[in-house]
Image (cartoon, rainbow, N blue to C red; front, side, top):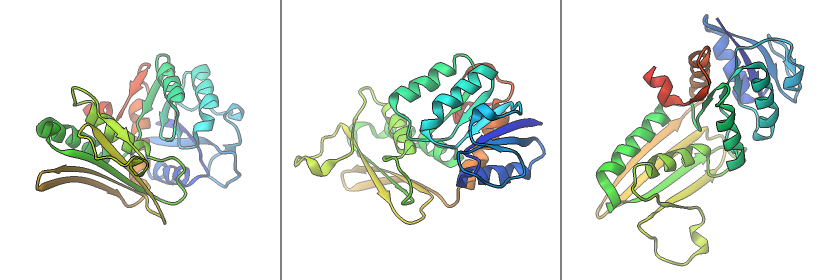
Length: 250
């Protein structure tokens, strides 16, 4: 039985994660942390420093601003961490990598199995298509999402660049430059509206043909299931930085 602490327990993702865990027999929620009040079948604290329970793994879907206190707690208690929040700065990402030298950390921009398969397919496409096709990434999310482009879109771009001898430039604001598109760029486009859970599309546009890879998430449960599976996977692992690729290979 894996004892789990949920950071962001009263948020939409936190509630979905708690619901999924309640239906499993291999893990349980021992406590939650959220700056807002909420009702749950487990104790909820306003700060992680107040937590009295001893979780084995923390699942975090709170906010990048909570990273310092989250990592301080995890490092002080030797607790494994599954990080599902997005919108981290370069400096914060470096913090996460440094913490993984002392504790097990599961860090990915998207917990969906389908998205991670999409990233692998994109890498294969780039290896075959080379520099013959222009690449554009389009991501769509609900109107409450703050960061743009999404962490997943960046993850997909990074996966593509990892297959290229020379990484392409990421271009976010095409309208500000009146010039033809270069062959060594990846266009990044963000759409925000309604209650879209998450859609990501990679367009490979060549001469007289277009290849498209697309993933749609129809509910937040696909991310929650991945996060819970990651927590079970991470429990008992040595210090290190883990991703969906590690879990799928386990």
